[in-house]
Image (tube, rainbow, N blue to C red; front, side, top):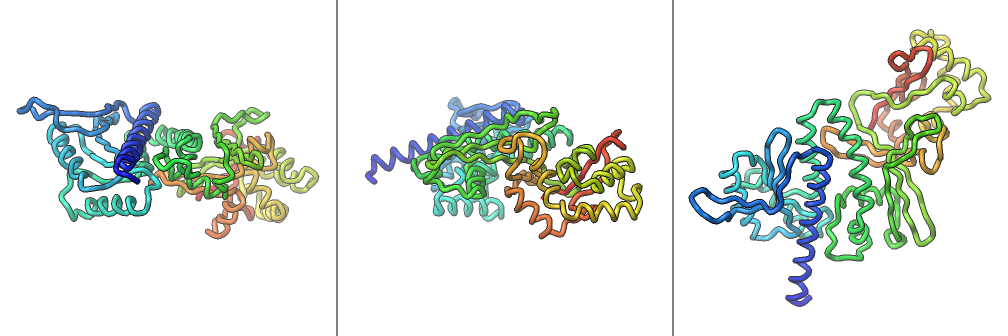
Length: 391
């Protein structure tokens, strides 16, 4: 590569990195995670005329705390420029508490190591630094989310994290630059939430050479009964050999058990085996009693024996809606993604693998299933509610 070509490549690569960071900031502002942003932030020392201190972006949270962000696709000696600028910006603007250099996800190994090593020097206080870190795009996104939701009431934060992860997934999968980078059709593509994109593609075992296009949506129709389907995100992948559809259920992981399923005894019977009269009778009895202990030891043991042959079908229905109402290719989930709110990290698995993981981790519930059996508030005698641990 000649000098001119190399400079052209660096400029294009760098410009795409800045564009990706700007898109991230716009998305986070739209989600109300940040209240204000400014591109090409400049500030002057009051004793001097020129606004000589510069960072590509400034963002502000609801508590008025501000962060400055600077995208680079390469860590070189010139990072001392960002050190200089961030030190003086923090000195002159007391609202600026954090300064980060952001690098693309999926950098080549050499550049990735450079970025990681420099970040570790900062984190381990091996060097004096006005920068608070050198972080990949995905980490920057998570840190901003974490800061923003820490300012919200718990219920509001949970709701936002759940909904916004679905939107985040859709944005990543629909990004054309991600596809170009993954297929190696572009050497300058930076992408958007590229690590998440790659993790999904890896889980789906899709061959990049076979992919023509990818479309994702979180606009999933309600079930015929009016209830919400298990699918939160639908992905259509156009391959050279035809179209494949995948469906994802997005759940928040929790140390405590959370409500994962709620239906009538009639619905349980219909999905598991409408011809099993004893199962139906025992499910109705459980629904009326409202709990395992209230049902009585003998009857609970009978129900557990009847459920033994339906455990796999029950798990698939509870986690993916499989076997229940709705359109199988759209409203039943083929995969599940659990999001750990404490770290904003995630785990992706096919429904079948997720059920196997329950067994590997020794997660047990009641009636020989991984779930706790109870009833919803005000629903005793009307519905059965299952609670489960998301892993």
